[in-house]
Length: 382
Image (tube, rainbow, N blue to C red; front, side, top):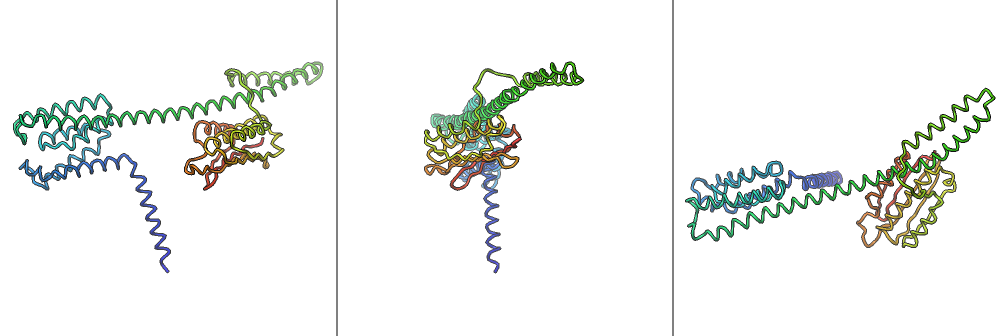
C-alpha cells in the first residue's frame, strides 16, 4: 500500500542527486576540490618515505602537512602563486615534487605562457640550489644527472600542459566571441533589412499621400479648406523627410519577395532534395508588404535549416490568417542517420529570423519532438 509513495520518493531523490551532480561536476570549485584531492592522494603514497627521511614529521603529522599544502590548490585560479610558493617550501623541506607539478600547471593555465616559463625557470633554479645544499638524501655528485633528468621534465611538462590549456581557453573564448559577433551582426543586418522594407513600402505610401494632398491643396485654394489641405501637404512632406532621415539607405538591393515568391522557394527546396508541402491561406495575399516579406524570410530560413540538418525529409509549411493573428508553421522530420542532432541551426540565420518577427510585434518558438522539429511564428495581421 505504501510502495508507490516510496518509489516516487526514491525517484525524486535520484533526480535530485543527478541534478546536484550535473551542477557540481562542471563547476570550477568542484574541479579545484578534485585537483586538491588527487594531489593529496598522490603525495599520500609517499607518506612512509617522508616519515623515514625527515624525523621531524611522524606519519599523521606528515599527512596533516601535506593536506594543508594541497588546500593551496583551492585558490589556484585566483592566486596560483600560493600553491607555487607552497610547493617550493615542500621541495626544500620534504623533497616532495608532486605539488609543484599541479602548481606549475595552474600558473601556466591561468597566467599564460610568459608567466609559466618564468615560474618553471624559478622552480628549476630553486631545486638546483636545494640540491647543492647539504642534507639531500643522496650524494650530490652521484645523483646530479638523475636529479636533473627528474626535476627538469617534471617542471617543463607540467608548465607546457598548463600553457597549452591556457591557449585552448583563449581559442575557445575567441570562437565564442566570434559566434556572438556573428549573431549580433545578423540581427543588425536584419534590422537594417526591416528598415529598408519600411522605407520602401511606407515611403511609397507617403509619397502618394504627399502628391495627393498637394493636388487637393491646389484645387481648394479658393475654398475655406485651403489652409487645412496645405497643412496636410506639409505634414505629409515632413513625415516623408523624417522617414528618410531615420532609415539610412546603404546601397541598392533587390526587394524582398512576398508570399507570391513562396511557390518558387518551395520548388527550389524540392530540387535540392527536401520536398515541401505548402498550405497557403488565400487571405494571406491581402497582408501588407511588410508582413508578406516577414512570411517569406521566416519560411526561407526554415527551409534552409531543414536542408542542412534533415535533408530528404518532407517539410510541411502552413501559413494561415487566423482572426487578428497570422500564423506561420514549418515542420520537418528528423534525419534517421543523426537523430540526436538538432535539425534547425541556432546560428545567425535563426537569430535574424527571430529579430524580424519580434520587430513586427510577433513571437517565434521552436519545439522538438521525438520525430520532428517545428517552428511556429505568429504576427499581428494589422
